[in-house]
Amino acid sequence: MDSSTIEVEPAPPPAPPATPAPGPATSRLLAIDVTRGLALLGIFSVNIQLFAEPFGTYMQPGPESSDPLTVLCYYFVKIFCEGKFYPLFSMLFGMGLALQMHSVIGRGGNFYAVYVRRLAWLFFMGLTHALLLWYGDILFVYSIAGVVLMLCVRIDPRTLLSLGVGLALFGAVLQSGFGALGAAGQQVGNPPASSPAAIADTSATGETNGAAATSGEPSPDMDAAPATPFARWVQAFRDGKIGPPNSPIWMETETEAYRHGPWSQTFYFRALSWVMFLLVCLLGIGWHVLGMFFIGAALLRMGLFTTAGEKWLPRLFFLGLVVGLPGAAVSPFLIGWAGMHAWSAALTVFLLMVCGPLVSLMYLTGIALLVRRGIARSVTNVLANVGRMALTNYLMQTVIATFVFYHWGLGQFASWSRPERCALVLGVYAVQCVISVLWMRHFRFGPMEWLWRTVTYWRAQPMQATQRL
Image 1 (tube, rainbow, N blue to C red):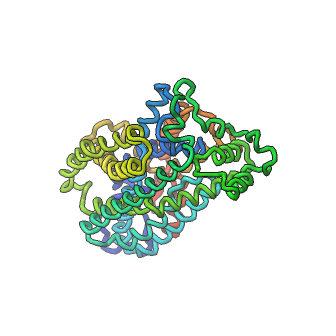
Image 2: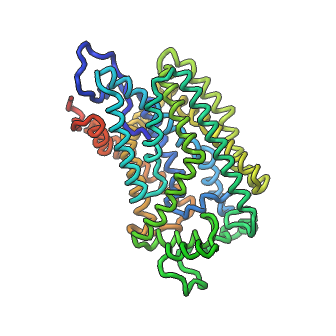
Image 3: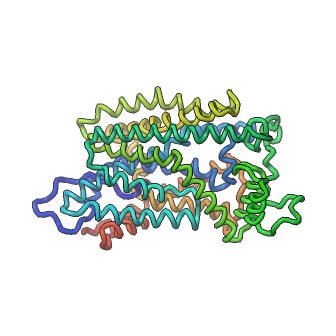
């Protein structure tokens, strides 16, 4: 996530300063800030499932009950959010890197030295975020993929775009194969708690066979088992009694750890889930993210947001609307229609990873058109302020969500319904909108943005809105 301020730099002065520094806030690309602000809402809508429930429930191929509001929340997030906002953030990251390259070089600085510091701090933040707070962190992955983009960003933009598309497709194929293998594995033996067979005939109560596994209390047959949840997980693994993350023992022990603690138990499960997340990135999503980096940098360098490139905005919006959105709408229903098969799982993942970025482009270009035409200025101004504090707001979402659901706060893990979780997302985001607007009236950067920029430029940045370098 490139959560820094995005700027369009003026022509360099005749005698540029020796020390690179961020450009004036008045030259900001408003459309990118607005897009980033909206993307924070979309990504939180997806992440809340991983904050509030065991990792295995994310593998469930349908809503957990037939309650209309639950069904609506499930499919709204699946169609409009899941697989759309991490590609959008990734494209924005690529755009931010390309802009900063022009900024630093135009000011007479060493771009690579500046950006290595930037990525090193992102690496540190991501590692800390993942291990101390939440395993679903994306900053760590961005810091690794950012090194590749940094080395390639000067490539001809059309070549960069072609490479990006190729990497994205490569990631989609890899991830589809991974999904097919997972589906084939689930068909061996009894169906897991999240399979269509396991959730059949539960519409009256909304409960699945895995409901007992998420109660957070030890099962009666575990009286002689080790006392701590992670020790029971390890024993079950050694005995061959534990399956994928949606198996009952895994979900039960994970729920107990996050709901009741102590911190060491949550750390073990968090580290385990993080390693699995990194493996998934290596086998597909990471390549997809890198492709989105390349595509974003290429589109920016090809002048998408300039007057000359304005003609492409409605074309890309239309492409996302007529191709991306229908494909994204179909993908959540495929397994329900065809059943859990290797081919249906692979096709579901492939559709999501191809059509998702097209929907991301629809969001990006749609917002750019609104901004250019001055439509809904009050709304876009609020979103722009949220986007200018994107890193701060992203980390704030983690702190709030883990406080609500983890043992060190309210201990509500695996206790809230899907509509309740969606209401929490909207409430937190509304508060962040208010805080962001008030903060940016007085300061140039958000707190974490200021820290990141200070490390990047190797000097303390002026914080007050009236201060100048």
